[in-house]
Length: 460
Image (cartoon, rainbow, N blue to C red):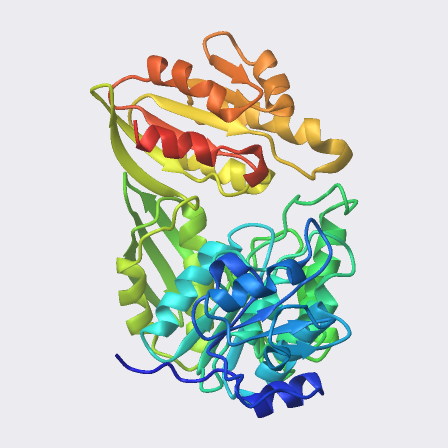
């Protein structure tokens, strides 16, 4: 068995944290969840929230951690295994800053209101085939996930793909200070977290702070179809970025989507780029995935990697669970096409999912849950889905949560399937109602809780 290459030497930890470190602490990873410790990890005992990580220091060491970062000596644990700092979250950020400083990787930052994770997965896959690539795991895109991702980045990384999400004003600039991207990609600006932002202009103004600490010789990739494009472009120019790359369906885009033909399990894409027409097929279903693939190819090109090889990678890549993944299952002898797009939702992404459902042949069923953090216009934004359901010939609506249930009450009787407060309460009714050959979309904000229902249906 090949020994793991150390990620952090004692000297590097000492330099990053400005504190003494025992020479036995050589780490191959960084972790703040004791349950996910693997042998060789450095455990960070975070405080605040629901628990105190200091309670799990002993457990982390039992699981194979080589040392622990703490704010005070934990009794019963060898003192040489403990690195004492004043603030463990700041220590995580210090490791992230040091990791960013020591690498020569080209760092790409991805943000936007919809499609961040899918776009990140696409780009990471393309770059992994062409060099040593480090990317955000899952959707670790917040003030803990981003420093965690950077702290786990090997020094010899060639490409880093960092997903950056925000939900409150003032969050993007400090995150950008950690990431210091060479290339920025903004998928779109849409109503999301509007409980904390008055409108999409405010969201755009916050998102564009991603360029505050960007390498000004780098480029920014923007959605030319987006209503906030000009604002983003103007700010990017004002802060000194030298190059703006536009993707979209508009003919003025640098890389233009000519068409996206949606099939049951794939999407045929045609683009115009550098005066040429390029055709390829994605194993993702929906025009929104096709559009984001243009941004991915633009990023690959801007990084100096092979676009031809990237197209080959994209043509084989499969969607991940919760991000538009289509699975054909059998329930009580009925064949059902299940579209799992339930990881998260805002009005723009839910509209895109409904339109994609509408491209399929057969009976079309939408299981829609509440979209959260939309503020005072939440009801109106949920109500907009009713018109989209009609426009896309959806046959049945099943509603989960109080807000979507209000929409259900206004739906025509023939559209009404059932409404429930909790997703699992829907299982028995949904299984009984489904017909052979149905296409069933699941879409909601993550905390609405559609995932347990989906997993039970898959296991039925």
